[in-house]
Length: 192
Image (cartoon, rainbow, N blue to C red; front, side, top):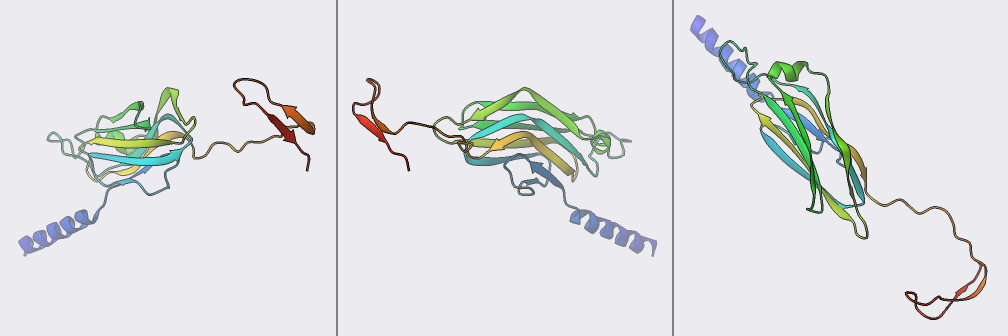
């Protein structure tokens, strides 16, 4: 009887643990909330922001918890390490990487307050005459078991250039265009 009870307890624990899901929410400016999720470690996830005007990469931040990790005997599931890093690139060109947030062991990850690592100076990716494509990459390494939490790329995102503001004022009349590099001819300004 004790054996069947023990087996049923083990089966229930196995089924309950298989239903537990890991979710590390990945965030960044311009990325809709909840659309990028890492469900296991290790992971590498990329997101593209097409037709962008500007992205400023200023760092990364993370916080979370996990069920543990394999480790040395007597570690009580506190073995292993967990490392998070991210990079941003523009138009397949220059890439800026933040350092790495390191959690020495799982207890360190579980009890740690929000960890932030800033890039100094910030990396600015900006379009000139045509929009650019921004590529965001999140990576997690280590052997954390079913981690949960957040992992964000910090910065600012601007999809379109600013709308021009202000006004120009010219007198009415006909004006002769100056020589090179402007074309010959006249321009007429009419008030409405």
